[in-house]
Image (cartoon, rainbow, N blue to C red; front, side, top):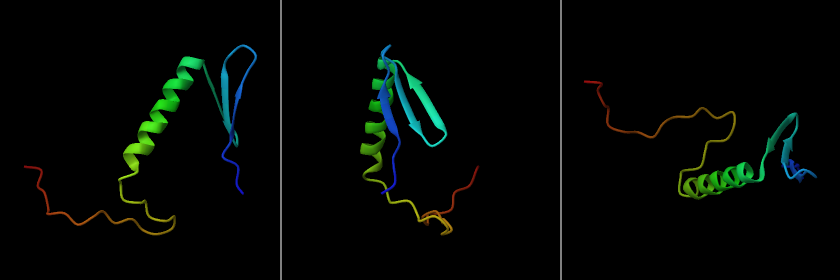
Length: 69
């Protein structure tokens, strides 16, 4: 199973998120806002069409042609 990273609350109250070589530090308020944005994004993406698999060329859905004028 692949790790998704980790979150740690430090003694001074900050929250450290790390994944691979990326590390982000948040105050408790910033972390709550970050968490809320993530939850909202997941809810909005739940109804979206799934993304294509890696390595497969992406083609936008067919729509009527639009002009810039």
